[in-house]
Image (cartoon, rainbow, N blue to C red):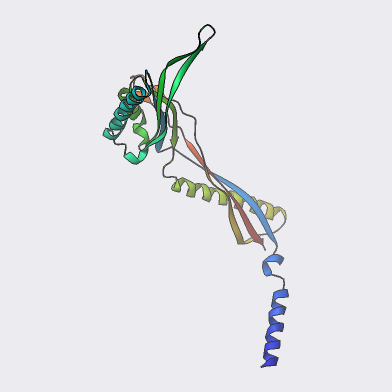
Length: 230
């Protein structure tokens, strides 16, 4: 029993001291980048309502009326509650400063801001027009950003292109070295899919309806791939 135990310990020690096969395998490591270009399928826009009144209560009440009208208009045009998010609510005194009168109270400013997601990008201009009509003069639109709400297919295409790019580079290097590529030892995604969006503004079309130009979105993936060399 004692001899068997000694033999087993010696065997384990011998195995642990053996160099790993992967450490001695000749290999080449290459970085590849792939890009997939698609049209955005959704639009996110930022809107705020700002009112000035003689009191905090009146200013907030007026802002609430415009905000409620905007919510109702959005829901009537197919925007769900989950896609309407309040991002800020402020009420504060507003002053005017002049050299002869110094600080003078102008009234109280109430502002409520929203982030709104339109899941059907093609209807974005129409929805924004509805919001402007419902919110009236207190409404401000401060930004419009097209984006991909479902980007998995574009990311998969970018990954495929990244691997193809890495393989093309690896074949070129291996050929220059007089070698051939063997099996893939490992693949690592260096950067997760990144989405490059165009900067979009709100413009009026010839028919006086708001038009949102979606442009294209680039989805980029970078991978690191190692091949054995034969």
